[in-house]
Amino acid sequence: MQDYSITKDTSLNQILKIMTYSGGFEGRHLANGIEILKKMNREKECTKFLSFVGALVSTGNRGIIKDMVKNKMFDCIITTCGALDHDIAKSFSSYYEGDFRLDDKFLLDKDIHRLGNILIPNKNYGPLIENKVQAILQKMYDKSKSAKEAAPSEVLKYMGSQLNESSFLYWAAKNDIPVFVPGIVDGAVGNQIWLFNQSHKDFKIDILKDQTLLSEIIFDAKMTGAFMMGGGLSKHHTLWWNQYRGGLDYAVYITTASEWDGSLSGAPVAEAISWGKVTTQARQITIHADVSTILPFIYHGLISK
Image (cartoon, rainbow, N blue to C red; front, side):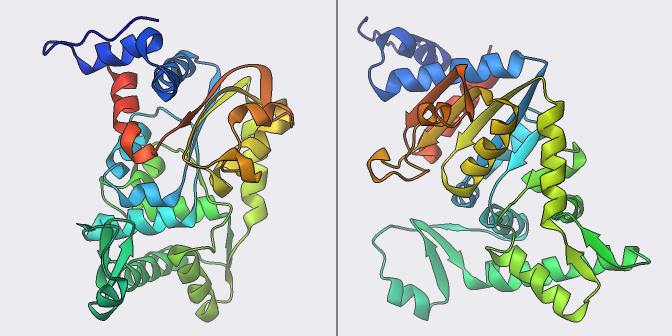
């Protein structure tokens, strides 16, 4: 291992490269993770999954997710309903800088939600999402001459087509990249789909259709790889489906969770090998870090020469 030697002329890409033999602990994991993702992206026969938690979309990293989808770096997205909520809300409004230690009773009186150190005025979230989603669903419903029973991914593709270019859903729809949200009802968008169904009983979603679509992607794939940002449902669903083809061939996972409580979020990628969800020969790594801190550096490492 060599000591770092950084000057004012050292580029960020050089630092990321130097990390492979100068970095210790998670620094080296970050460098290795970037190299695995680079190799995965160069593999033309690899079907690439991107999974992420909803909270990430509330930050400025939404722009990086959007660019990765815009640039067709992945073939399939698995995320949570929260990601949909924030993507739609930020397409038409703004979030603001706050602090982790603000008085939440005071914020409640001011009609402001706090997500960590991000402030979201209520008018920019719930009521906005309701107005936009109800209008989009009505437009989708009116275009159909008969009863609808669509897969959630089909509904999300139509929603994306109605958003602007700042949205990852917009670029997923434009680039025909399916977005799967297995917990579609766990959030504002899913709640609005339910609410729309109350007055349009012939408008329904069939979550099993998405499982069929996922099975087709998995069984048609010659190789698979995944970049998993955060744990929970999005990570598990990615791993779950890949076990049916013998596991992922590439896997990079970022988490801040500890493995000692046996949680899925804390489990390193290596644990998934024992379940057949990652192959024994896979190039894989777990990076213990805050995604919002390191994603800009990872993305820079992926797009720089």
